Length: 555
Image (cartoon, rainbow, N blue to C red; front, side, top):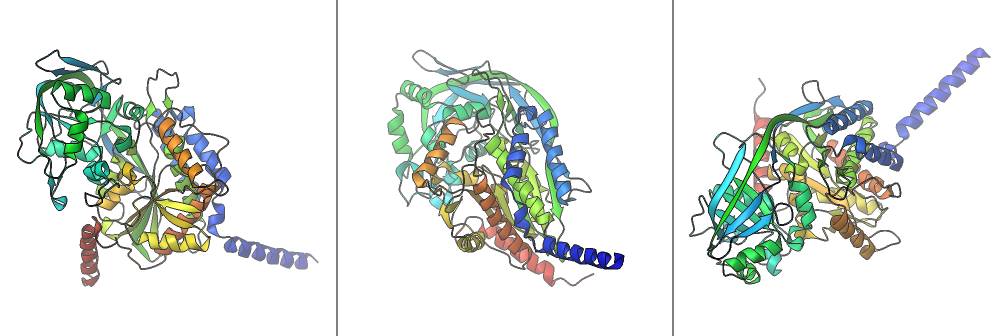
């Protein structure tokens, strides 16, 4: 009898083991677990998850521990942490921008009218009577036959720049990408180009529509500590970078004898010429400078047959930290941005950890630092990858995930970019869902998240966000919810965990992203950018490199 019982027990054990094997890995992606992870990461205890803070230590330890529990291997020389060196520069907020003119000088207050900072390692910055030059959109784009700096020397001067690009301003599809923002419309590009031109200062005119966010996002994002990667030897940045409100800009242009509305219209016209404003800009402030270390967190499942080829899933753990706030709540919790993405990353790590057999290619899970400071963690990773970018198959990025419930659609930021969309479309169709282009392409989301660093290195990148066609509620409701988030919660202390959120939509989206990554991880396919994409040439060069490597005789 005991033997029979033993045999029966063994049989039951085999049945149970078979049931475990048959359980699909995506079954481990659960709304309750997502809610738990977001609640922890976005708690006040984590202090807004600023780089090089106590909140960082709590965040990266939490992610490491969950990677370990999921069965991921440490990816950085036996560690889960990739050290990212940063320079922290904190400007004294008690500064005033003075615009000198033949009439009465104009003064503009920090935060109310302008925000300024420096990307130099300088304890004191003094922009003294720097001549102002209006350079329109501040773009040099040979492929579009556009050069706002043609015929003018701005070395040592301060350039005044409009945000976004002429395509957005005119709605003309023949200018740049029409309504869809190009990288030339991003603030990062405008400061980079001003540096290439040798400008001493660069001030961008803020406007909510073309910027994609209100002025409070500017003050919340660019006040307090700012981080940068250590500057390369010989590199140049303007002494002062910053934003001015549209209202302040109207006063500055009026003092120059110009009408801002007319100048905006002129700047969007092909053949626009930059114009000296016959005014000067002066601003001085002190900086506290620290050299600090932050960390990317990287776990991986080594491929069983091609460990040197990888699919990367990415999300950023950082947010804006804790800053003085007149409203009283000084913690920028970043629940959706991007605790929701990290929660998704952890869910996918658990799902792949349960995948048996393990994938043929490696799967890397990358939680980046300093995304809010200009995609710095992602940039550092692409310069120091754990698997070469030439053999990185794709990046799948998660940022600001769905917290409102299931949708008929899923939004692809940068829709029409790469063959990764074909994989996503196939799996979406199986569950009755469709792909949707970004409903607000003018906001330039494609250039505002970590996947962009992979893209501009040539790696095909897929970045999805929540759809807008919510089941039982419709498109108008969904778009209104996203607009409300941007207006009232994005980069504000109110981006906090809400127990009423419905994570079934994020679960559905993560299952699709799992399927895309799993399909790629178990194939020999190399998805490419669609013809005409700006990043295709870089990928083609990587393909040639791979082919040469494959053709080389073994040692």
